[in-house]
Image (cartoon, rainbow, N blue to C red; front, side):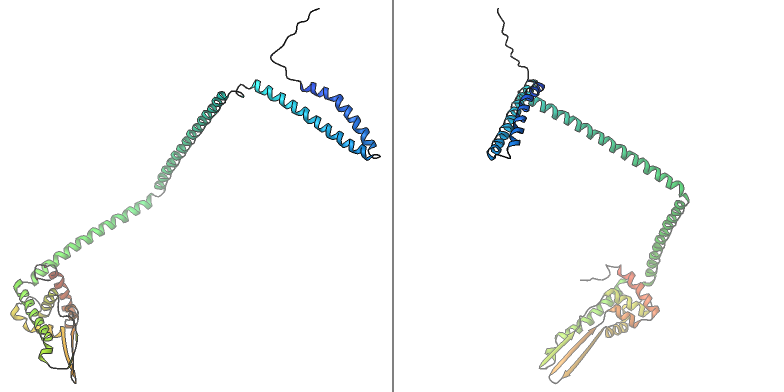
Length: 311
């Protein structure tokens, strides 16, 4: 009688149920032996040692069975997973996963942008509604504010017009006051400069003119503003003038502006010169009405930059 032997390339995986059934008799036998040895171990120390050896062997057997079972399962997994043994397939799988993740990320970003745009549009629409509501509910306040603004603009325009009229009045007043020639004012300035130069020369030659063992000088600066001088002459004179008419006024101003004192102590002389500006003299020499005129004269003359040659 002949029998045919067949060999299959694919081995069926061992059944977990078959393993469990095969292990039952072994586990029962081992458990029976274990109980018998444990019952007699109280009487014999050697038996107790044998029991521990037997328990260690039992644990080793179980570990060996579990290792064999895990190995068989790993082989089945390799046969069923098409990517497990093919590195190129694994790379394709990772690439596909990355592409899916990028697509999902892009879709999420687009959705966030759309939501943000929608929220911004809603805020803008809400702001416009609030403005319209405010204007509707506060029309009377806005009208009052607009009226105040118009009044302010009108007042500013009026002040500007008055300022122009004032400047025009000053120009007309100055032209009526200074009816004299520019040469008269320039001549008065020249005369006053000569008087100052003579004072400076006297101080410069003092040591050569007077013999003392020591000289002490305490001198203020010599000089004046020609526009202040002309305004002061006009205020003191009471209007327009000529150079021939103001000799005494020049002397009065000069003596008030410069005060020279000389003190002799033995062989030592102390020379002191006190100088006051023309503007300060005006407050001393003029009455209240003359002082107002002086200020007007000076304001007008100061614009005549071509009248005097100044350094």
